Structures are given as C-alpha cells and as structure tokens.
Amino acid sequence: MTVLTRTAGALYRRPRLRLALLLTAPLLWLAVLYLGSLAVLFVSAFWTTDSFTSEVVKVWSTDNFRELFTTPVFRQVILRSVGVALAVTAVCVVIAFPVAFYTARVARPSRRPLLVVAILTPLWASYLVKVYAWRLILSEGGLADWMLKPFGLSGPGFGLPATVLTLTYLWLPYMILPIHTALEHLPDNLLDASADLGARAWRTFRSVVLPMVLPSVAAGSVFTFSLSLGDYITVQIVGGKTQLIGNLVYANIELNLPMAAALATVPVVVIVLYLLAMRRTGALSSL
Image 1 (cartoon, rainbow, N blue to C red):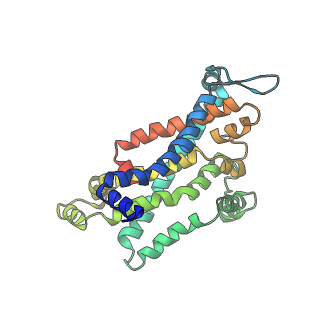
Image 2 (image 1 turned 90 degrees about the vertical axis):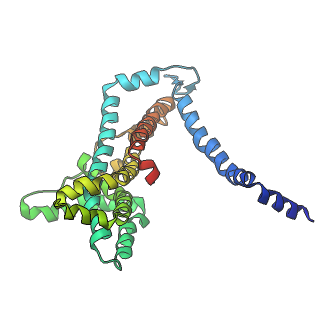
Image 3 (image 1 turned 45 degrees about the vertical axis):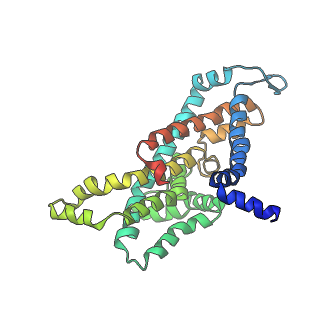
C-alpha cells in the first residue's frame, strides 16, 4: 500500500480533517490579507504625521478621530456619504420591485431567463465605461438635456443628483436579482388565498408579498449601500464639486496617511453597524 493510498484512506475516515485541510488555505488568506490589512488600517489611524516633514510618527494618539468628529467639513462629508448610500438604496428598491415583479410573476416562463440575462448585461461592461457614458448623458447639451428640453426642463448636470443617479444605475442589478428570486419562489396559493379572502392588490402586497420579500430586499440593500458608501470614482467623474468619504481618503493618502486611515475606518464601522441591523431581518441568510 502506497503512501498516497494510506493518506487517502485516512482522509476518507476523518471528514473533519478533510474539511480542515480544505478550509485552511482560504481562511489563512482571509485572516492574513483581509483581516490583517483592516487591523493595520485601524492601528495606523491612531498614529500622527509630522507637520514639517509629513512623515508618519508612530505615536499612539486619538487626535485624528477627535479632528474627524469635531471638524464641520468632515462631519458634513460623512453624513453626505451615508445619505447618498441610503438614497441610492431607496431608489434601487423603488425601481427594482416592479422590474423584478414583471420578470418573476408576469413575463412568460420562457422569457424569464432572457430578462435575467438582460438585467445582468450591464454588469459585464467596464465600470469606467458606464460612468463616463453617464457623464456624456448628463453633460450640458447631452442626452438628458435633449430629452427634457421639449418640456422646458434641463438635465441635472454634474453634482449630487448625478452621483445618486449614476450609482443607482451601477448597483441596480444587485437589488433586482434577490427580489426576483424571492418573488419567483413566492407560493401561488398564498396569493390565491389572499384574493379569496377579499383582499385587494395593495392589501395583498402589503400583508403577503412584502413580509416574505423583505429579507431579500434587505439582502440587496447590503450590496447597494456598501458599494455606494465606499465609491469615490463616480463622484469624481459626475459629482462636480461634491465630496464623499472616498475622495477625502484618496486626497489624504499622500499628505496625511493616518488621517486617511481614520477616514477609511468610518465606512467600515458604518457597514458593520448596517450589517448588524440587516441581520435582524434575515438578510444575511438570503445572500
């Protein structure tokens, strides 16, 4: 009996050992590279910078966090970033529900896979290509101005509304797909029972559909909220003079690395709190 055969036999008799060997490499990767980098980020946020040489001084201090929450500009940017993430999530929910309801409940079964592919198609395009396409659409004299001109209106131009609109387009598929899956698995007999009991369409939606789909909505919001909160390229391209957390982190990397680290901890903490809140809705089990 060869060594390979004996090893295979030992692993076959010990399923827990097989599982441990299988998970060792990815867990080490997660612990060392991902969690390790977050730990370094958090520790470096407590360092300071020499005002004359701009070199990092590895002395423990909470000055960065004190400045972060006492400086009005930083507070405004943090609140604006969270507001943008919440706005993008809300708009995605409003758009995703009717689209997902059509693809899951109204469209013919033979066409549903094609509709899902159509929803996923924007994800195959380059991120920068999509953002710059929206820059052309929203620019002065662009497609938005041309479509709204007959009504005496003009496009939003570059700024906060353009940022929310572009981010909504970028992350909308991540909201549609969970809702589509939940609606597709919604038992028909529940809808029939609600109709037989005399409930109208809105009452059925509020009392039957929404409670069952809500965990999937929360699951989709995890993606739209976190991706919007950490984005900084879109606001640079279509945001005009608008600043979000990502822009401040990028601007401080060269000049004040500890402050950039302190700023970067804010979205991490916000997302962790958001995940804890979504956990109560069953969203994490729907991911």
